[in-house]
Length: 61
Image (cartoon, rainbow, N blue to C red):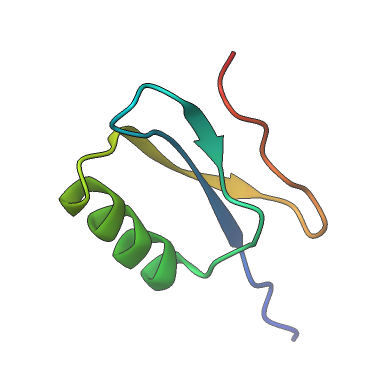
C-alpha cells in the first residue's frame, strides 16, 4: 500500500501589513517550523494549510 504524502503551504501577513503565500510546498513538520520562524519575525495571521500536489496558495485579499 502506497503512503500518500500531504503537502502544506503557508499564508501570512508581514509586519508591514502585506499579504503573502508560500511559493513552495512543505511537509507538516517543515510547515510548522516555517510558521514559528515567520511569527518570530513579527508576521501575523500565519496559517498552515493543506495543499494538493502542484497547488499554490494565493495571498489573502
